[in-house]
Length: 469
Image (cartoon, rainbow, N blue to C red):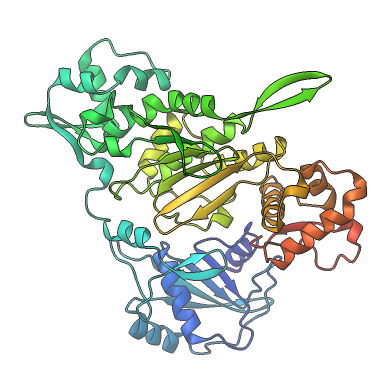
């Protein structure tokens, strides 16, 4: 164990607290129940470290702690209360005494609770785990959904007949093997098919990605993305309702092109010339569709990814709740389907980890659209793109959301939000400085952004960072 002073200073310099690292000032004491809750939440997130005696805001000054003056006795109490062992280490930092709690990961397929509550972290808060997160944990140790059979007893010819093997090699820019054995060997190595005594089993992963027709596999047709176009701004009248037919990998480009062809256009005048401009940027549509396909909860039945197009917005939703708060979509990443995500990244269908939402927010700013809205319902996660609105048409929530997302985008690009940068985001002239200051103030009141330097007294030189920074 033996945590060094250098290691503590390295942790203090981390970009931000994350799922496995937590700092608490605790100069004189720390509540036992709060300690137990943090240990349970960190264990459920895969284990980590809780440090007492350090401020939780940058630069995370070491202030020292007088809490738990008998670490050995406290470790015994924690084991009796929690049922798992937490090692407590006392480190005498030059600036004060620091306690380091070494919290182990929960066992595979198990989740810890405190007083009946299964806890996890969501930003700065501890919250109960969602139903689908619990279901995913309890399913660990069992064959995952992607390894389960979509179709068994397939001969070589049938595998190639049902799966678009050519597209796999095309998407990876690889030459097609000279014989069928080479094709099957490659698909087996990717766990898209599995050898059996009576031939081949096509896995759910193989079918959902490379099926020429999803309907040829039981239950797969219900996993196809569904595109619905409504007349007007509500669901009262449907103009089009069309489900996809192909696997995600082989059908993705066609799906995006089909959706984008349905997106309404706006007429704009530039230098006395009229031209039609699509309501939403294609890259935003592409990234959000890819995210919905990748992050959905495949264990939910009777539901699928949906792309719903209205006259004034587009809603892209998927089954399941996210593992992280929507407020952290821009800077954090955690996928429930890492095998699927990894393969789709290699196939060029989605971006590297965590960069997709950044591109969506950036595209909305470039196109001068309202900020995208990410919503979590009882069983679905939705992303909304909105048609252009002038700032006068935006309500308070629209403005706060745009300000917060702009601040996050600046921060992950190693910058800070200023009044000027937000004015440029809204394409406002300098005489609208007061209006932008009001938006920033409202966003601070909502707890979404904070001053980068609280000691800065000049409003002219103030800059801002997200609340979690």
